[in-house]
Length: 148
Image (cartoon, rainbow, N blue to C red; front, side, top):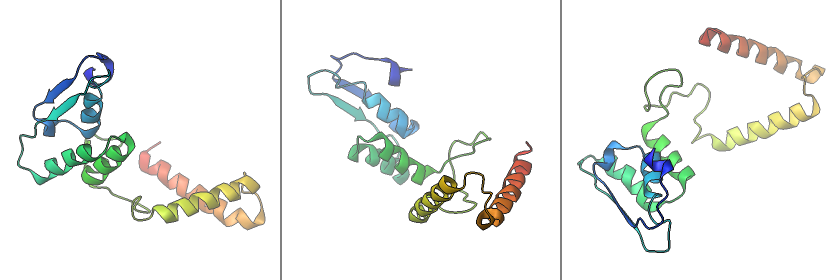
């Protein structure tokens, strides 16, 4: 709970040994515990690993204070893990698109969906009949995969 529950404005130095054993989100939160007052502060993260990956991860923290950017970079490096399983990171297995490489296409598709649903929320027009049929089949298939 230290990373979110401690507020000591006079704390100016934190040393984290074996920083490679922590997630980037944890390290980002921990370093936010120092420097809450007016005095100059330092967060020293000691990397005890020779791994290039662990150095890469700590470099991300060194270059940014933006939590969203840090999380995004961590996701790119380690992968998302299993939603229903126990694995916390790993290879991304995309069923339809790669969220990084296809971001523009996905944004455009999202805009098109919003436009269509804005005009025809029930997809009841003749123009959208095939789309509605496909979505019903797709959703039924997804429910079967999840055993719901």
